[in-house]
Length: 212
Image (cartoon, rainbow, N blue to C red; front, side, top):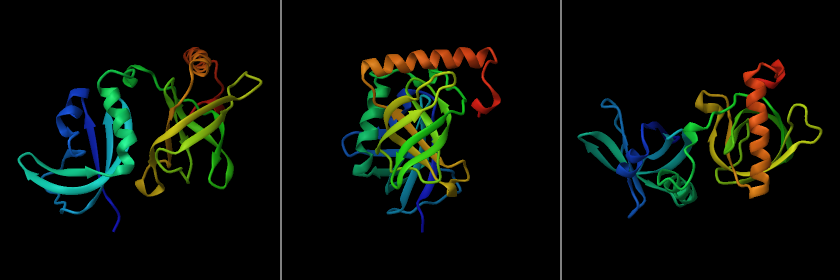
């Protein structure tokens, strides 16, 4: 049996602090009143906090009736994502919700398991992008990408980590979200490109092929 899937949308950063217990790395996830999830079940949490989307996986270790929900022990593989999220919530990282996600289709070549793969972006901003692919890399994987920018002679070289994945069985366009890992010079170059793309998008200067 596959993992049970729940969506968790938090309206503010403070809500994450209320449901996450750093002492034992558990998180409380509300559940619909008519849904029963047993202890020991494997759970997939599609989390949206402050505009940052990430998938967390863990095991149900407790249930609650008021309010209805489950306590989930997060796996060791989720530790890096939680550390990133905690920094984001504390204000150590920029609020991604305030950053516009440009719905632009850009050609990308990246290092897949089988070798170089070609695909397209769903969206992009200064902090990351989403790539369409039927074979997303495991979450937290390092990834190198060459992103073709309209009007630029050379592709933009970017490095990042897979923050979350969407599989074909999820009834959504499959792919993977990437959070960039860049030095100051790379980030400055990316920021300049994002500003140019945003201006071109607003002015209607991008061709249809460049838009998702």
